[in-house]
Length: 262
Image 1 (cartoon, one colour):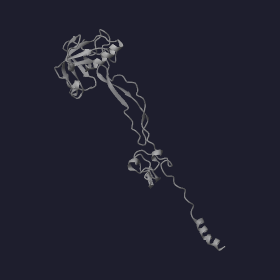
Image 2 (cartoon, helix red, strand yellow):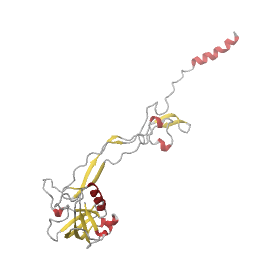
Image 3 (spheres, one colour):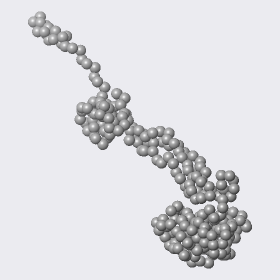
Image 4 (spheres, helix red, strand yellow):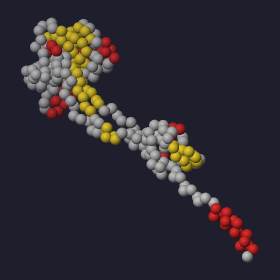
């Protein structure tokens, strides 16, 4: 009886204690937190990855600050940017001159939680349109001859011979009158161009579309001694003017002075 009496004050004291408060959710998942950038309001409490406990964060910057909550990586996984397929190429921006065409794509999923950022959404490529918006053919003097190194023609001839489509081409000799400074920063064959040089430019399929039809920009329809325009393929800054000297059956210039219509 005496023992029971000794426990009565203890039981009475326990009954007077306030009820235990519910445990506050901890971590990112329990509170549904995932914030971009650095957000001091994106705060929780609980274990950190290093095993310590206390305030912790669920924002994107916590990985660098080393103060993430223990479940940040699982609750807020990195989601990379997702983009659509490329659209079809547009038409040339302007007719009768060397310009560009465009294709685009759009964002399907924005990156989240430090995921890989989005790639370029627009791409441009060189373009040449030989017909005006009214449907008339551009003047030959306005059309720059698109040229590349003559070595490219060897691969063309091998492919044409293999599929039986090889046709005889021709050569045009020009004298360089001017060239832009951008040629000095291109490929080796571009940096070798000099004013006054005589060049051989070969016209062969597929630039030679049909027998009897000249390559675009060869100057055949232009008055004698008229300044004509040319541009190097692969470097839009390498361009200039030249004068047509004559047409030849075959090119006989040194290889460093031999080029090809595109």
